[in-house]
Length: 320
Image (cartoon, rainbow, N blue to C red; front, side):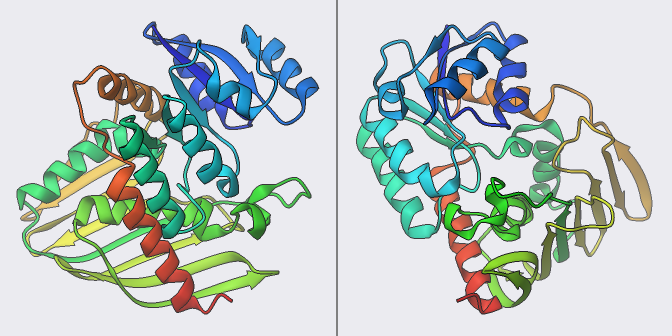
C-alpha cells in the first residue's frame, strides 16, 4: 500500500488525488497538513482522512507517509518538496513546478541527492490521448512538422485568497494555465523552443493573458496562448505536418468531451479518448515509478526545461 500525505488543505486535491485514490487499491491517504490546524481537521473530517499533521514539517517527517502530494502555492514548492525529499519521501508536486528555472534545478538536484522520485503533476501527460498523440508525431506519419499551436483559456474568478491572481505566490496566466500549452508542445514536437516573441496583458504584475511565438528544432512555427479571462473555455492542441495534422479539443481533460482527430493524406480518423481519467492515469504512473516499472515522464530535466521556457516567455513579454 502506497501511503500519501497531503501537503496543504487544497481545493485541487479532492479531484486530483482523493477521488482517484478511492478507485485504486494500491493507494491510501493517511494524513493532511495545513498552516491552520482547525482547517486541516475540518478537511480531514470532510474527506475521511484519518490523521492531521501538526504542520508541514511534521507531515513530511511522518513514518506513515511514502509520497507527499505538494499542492501548496508555487512559491512554496521548492522549500517543501526539498524538505520532503530530504526526509526520504517521494513527491508529486503540482504544476507549475517552481517559481522559475533556478528553483526547478534546485528541486531536481535535491531529488537526485535523495534518490527519490519527484514528479510534476501534469496529469494530462499520462492519459492515453497524449501518449497516442506523442507516438503519432514521433512515428513521422504526419510528415515533417510545419506548424503547431496550443491554447488554454478559462475564467478564474478574482478573490483576495485566489493565488492565481497573486504574483508573489506564483500566480499568473502563464504560470497556472500557459504551462500546459508550453509543456504539450514540448512533449509532442520534441526539443526545446526558441522564443521568437511574446506579448501579454498585465495587471499589478500578473499576466491576465499571454501569447508567444516559438520555433522548435523540428517545427519552425509554433504558438502558445493562455488567458485567465475568457468568453468561453478553450483547450486546443494542433500539430501540422506536410502529410497531415492532428487536433485535440480539450487535450487537458480527455475524460470531458474530448475530440481527437487525425487527417493523413486526406483521410480523417477520429481516435479513441476513453480510458481512465487523467488523474487516475497520473496515480497509475506514480505507482509504476515507485514500484520500478517506469521512469518518470515529468519532473527532472523536463520540469527545468519547461520553467526555462516560461522564464523566457516572460522576459520576451517585458514583465518586470
